[in-house]
Image 1: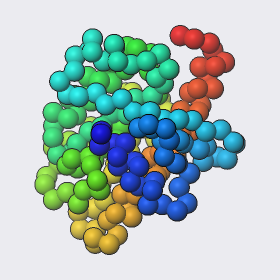
Image 2: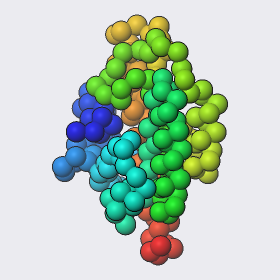
Image 3: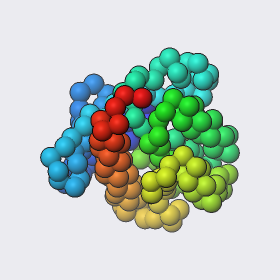
Length: 184
């Protein structure tokens, strides 16, 4: 299974007050944090580094309305890959894009990063401003390196929960906009 869905599932399962629930298959059922009664099923499509733009185009379905660009701040090439995939998503008309940065493998609540950053916060904020007019568009799931172990998992959980809540509001807004404009 892909690391981001697994991380999202782990964080939502740990939180008693989570507005997100495990959905069908590999997805999450996201409830509107603004409590307007809306909910949506979020399904993930992992895009491996080895994929070409043609493979990406063939795999993305028409209902895709958001792209999450994952960036490992310890790997400069991760940033370059995200730039490329952001262009691919934009070329398919996916206007809702967010940048989610982390340190090390995006899996199972990793420990605090001690290695030096290869991707600056400024670069991540610039990319977020390029792929999305809606703010915030960049979320960093990296607690401070000296965060005590007992606080670390809660910090990651809070950051993922915030990311999912903002993503839910943005997706619902995008879907509403698409419905009022019509098919692309």
